[in-house]
Length: 103
Image (cartoon, rainbow, N blue to C red; front, side):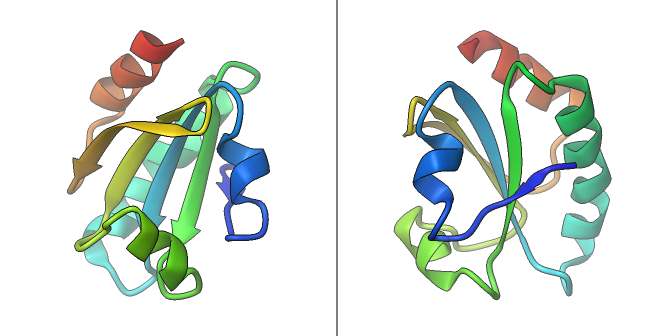
């Protein structure tokens, strides 16, 4: 399962190693297609990278902090710093490749 990120656990979730955050909302059609891909990656990359999701309706501060204007937006972090930002539906293979490039 992808970790649910809030402003309270953000730093401990992305502070070390490689993390992928999926900014989404329950009413967003493309987000509903992205979530199963994110969940698959969280299983496949368990122990290697942190895969997490941020509900922008519940965490507007985090969405604003990272300039999320449309969803889904996926942001790749390395040791707490954003290194890549992808807007729109992403394939599992492209996400996995981007994550593995940061490991």
